[in-house]
Image (cartoon, rainbow, N blue to C red; front, top):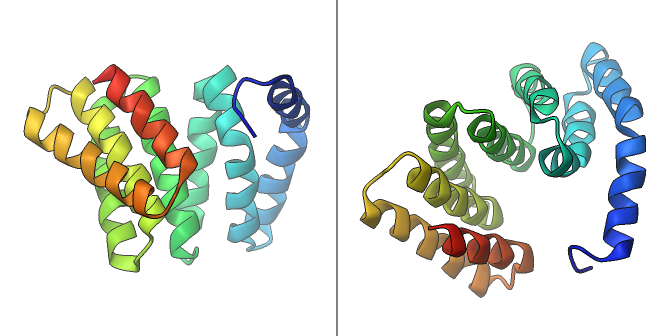
Length: 168
């Protein structure tokens, strides 16, 4: 599905209407030792809240899911960490976001999660650009993330890399 279509906007509208339900799911799941369910509930909302805000609303929920999810499967933990890093950057905590995105890339590498590694590298490049990192580090991260996305035909990752290229 293409971003920006009327169907995409309708889906985001429906998801936004479900925000309180998904927050309730997260709350219930965390109190019943179902951290995987809590993480999935937050991940279902994160794109909507990052796009439509308020970003401050999703940040504590991502933090909670990571804090209680010590035994989350690596893919879920990686996704939560990447989104938390993105959120932190958007609310002005660039250094903390940069630290988390580097950890997300390392964890994804360690667990063989190519897609998550690629997305972390792409956001690492973007965050590095915001933090005035060395150009070589920025472009190496972006190009490596983009290469993985091309090899794996990850359209979402290629879209993110294109956006990052436009900014950087």
